Length: 249
Ligand code: ADP
Ligand code: MG
Ligand code: MG
Image (cartoon, rainbow, N blue to C red):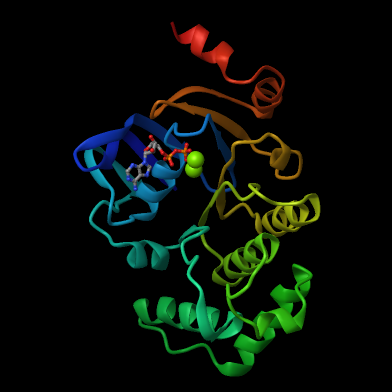
């Protein structure tokens, strides 16, 4: 599904990513861990196509298509979802209206008509129930006065509604209490299928108790320096990152 080959990317002529190779297949859950500043968010942003980042070498393909030239909206329409993609507060636009627009934009990009209102409503109800989201929450203004947990809930709701092929969740556990963490994990686990893939970027092992990854990668100084199974996450929790640095010397 996603192939990243020898990727060097960053901004203002400075490469933060220093030769990333990663392949994510349908049905897989990958965790990317690593110390602060190692380039995790940069990697997520480059895959999502954020404009401020530049690729200087290598390439990214999604479903065997080079996506380098696509803007973030086009990538989203192809089924790539990045959490925190819409962190803006939009007073007067409700959670529901925002997602309706996003869904119909995606359909338009595929030359499909708007989703019929009744179908949309049914889907909203189903997904909200599945994620245990209060109906009142759906009519609130987007991100206005949202707590950290509510922002996460909204993101997971957006993800559930958009049904992406590839979901990239960046540090969804930062600032989350254990209940909100479970909401996120539960949402991801319910949406997981053999046809989609999830990349969870996290600083902490904690989230991986709930979202069990098939593969764990350690990012350091813009490179994936170690890959393994979920056991690697436990090892990192126990020993930190220094032992990997030492191994590299
Ligand atoms: P992580 O998510 O692993 O903590 P980041 O990808 O956010 O790491 O950051 C990697 C490096 O790139 C850091 O040194 C950070 O300071 C720098 N960086 C990230 N975003 C920007 C930006 N928009 N402008 C300048 N430097 C940035
Ligand atoms: Mg960081
Ligand atoms: Mg980050």
